[in-house]
Each structure stands twice: as structure tokens, then as C-alpha cells.
Length: 228
Image (cartoon, rainbow, N blue to C red):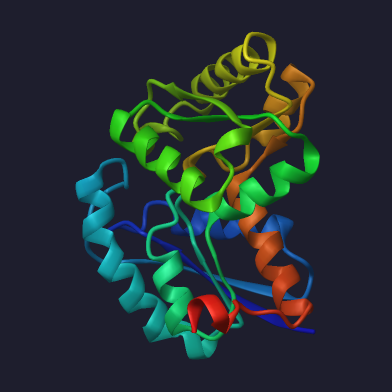
């Protein structure tokens, strides 16, 4: 069964398009095709409420523009901008990295911690998303690394060290059983972190990909009783 999945990077530039496509293809099933696009305009990253509000209509516009060509859509940001609205407009699976990561983490353990970038606004929005999805009682803590999203791939070893340190704190001091990487800019480093902290680490991009593939292969789409 050949699948075509659209990945929308909700930013106004193509800095990550190719590297993201390579990452998704690395973990995709052999018969899954991936196309990564950006918004063509908008913020350089989504770290504030203003950024979120700016990309929201742009993500919806792109999703509606391309949905007929693809079997599923992934909005490649941990804040899941536009995901719930697109579910009401597109009769195909639409998946956000946050919702996919939480669902997978809930299978792997009960108490989870999140490592993201340090931004009070972003952390607050993640907390709101988790509350809306019904996982608040399983979230132990959110820790942020002091590196902006746009610089996460500038010194990948520095980024890994920061994520490992925060993850270790969540496991040892907060007794988290599972770590979720709370930014898709951290995609691709989960196994490096996992080796250091000896606990499962959920990669948000890979989680979204695998959930999208599974939904399409199972013939499932969002309930019209909720999103119809």
C-alpha cells in the first residue's frame, strides 16, 4: 500500500525542509512517500503566542491546498498548530507531534517529562495542549534548554548535552518514566539521549509519522462525531 504523507513545517522559510525530509524518510516504511513544505511566509519558528496565531491560518491554508494529493498530513511543530481545525476540514488523518507523542508515551509508562526549548510562552502553550488532550495527570514536569529553535542544529553536540542534562534531571529528581522531546527541532537525537538516561525517549516527528502511517493503513480517520 503506497502512502503519501505531507509534512507542513509551520515556518516562513525552507531551512529545515530537506533535512526533515531525510529524517522522515529514514524512519518511514519503504512504501511511504514524504513531501515536506513550509508556509512561504511567517515566523522563523513558533515559540510565542504571536507566532502561533500567525501560522494558524497559514497552516490551514496549506493543508487545504495540498490535501487531495496526500493520504495524511503532519503539522511539524510540537504545539500542533492548526491540527484540530484541519481535522474538521480534511477527511484524512491529520496528526500533530504533541498528540502523537503523548499517546505513545502513555503506552510506555505513566509518568512522563518533557524537554523543550526554554520559553515561558512555549511551555505554557505546551501545558495548555496537554491539558486539552487529557494527559495533565501524567505530566511530571517540563524542562527547557536555553537554545532557541533556530539554533538547535547549529551545534548539535551542545544541544544533545543540554537535552541529556534536562532529561537526566527529570528521571532522577522528578521520577519521570518516559521523556518526550517537546520540540520537533530536537528530532533525530532521541536514541542518543536514551542511551544516556536509560529510559524511553519519544521523538515527536517520528511519533507523528508512525501514527499517521498506522491510521492510513488501518483505514481510520477522525470521528465525525467530534470533528464532523
